[in-house]
Length: 68
Image 1 (spheres, rainbow, N blue to C red):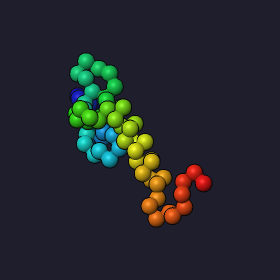
Image 2: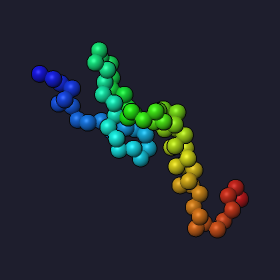
Image 3: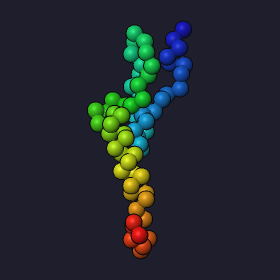
């Protein structure tokens, strides 16, 4: 009986990524949260979330200046 294949497929937690996360190590431990792309890691995921939040807060249809 293989419990690893019965578990649902975990997807990468990088914003916008739909790739499956890498499987857990054969010797044990938790399954990583990111896929096998080198640029998908905790630091770049944080930077991307910050960039997306900044983009969302800057509404180009809003004529009022920021900070006023």
